[in-house]
Length: 162
Image (cartoon, rainbow, N blue to C red; front, side, top):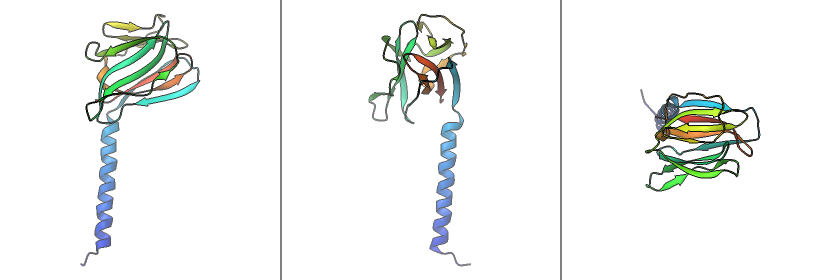
């Protein structure tokens, strides 16, 4: 049987497409979502993601009575520190959470807004509320935060990728 170049190219293209789909599944199939946590208010939606292949080193948090805003800090492939977009409101005092010193997100408390983020050894936000009891999420594995925010973060979901 005689094969044509067109036929061989078709098979090669089919193989490449299958590998791309498989690789994409491997990148997302192990992802785990925690949330949403917080109130039902639906102001502006947000979604901040760490690019694939980057290493999370910390989280910037702005808080007062509630958690106002959050931003993930990571190291890119070139070894440079970068950060996702800041998501949430404009207020709150600035805090940097180092993923090595405080490696675990232990719980989230919430009411109408995101009240507190409780990490190993430190809490941000002052108003207690119902707690999630997350069971220790490694900060270095948080690759995405999404939810809704106005003046404060109304609700949030954390996505992890091992």
